[in-house]
Length: 112
Image: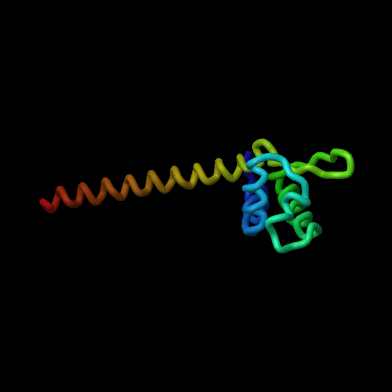
């Protein structure tokens, strides 16, 4: 079940451009903090903080292998947000379809 708290946490986590970039990078496969830090002008601890936010939101997971943590996208981690976006998109499609029908009927009545 999609909860407001879950959605708020997900969208807050994705509200930062660096975190969206990290999610994009992880969509290509697992990576370490060092690898995820490379494209940014920020420290590894700063990237680790972003990863913690993503992990707390249930978007990423970590796996300790030796001395390194490997991060990857959590399967289904964005499912709640995806379901909510689908619902909103469906609502708008229905509303716009009704508006189109109304305008077409109004044009038919007025002979336009």
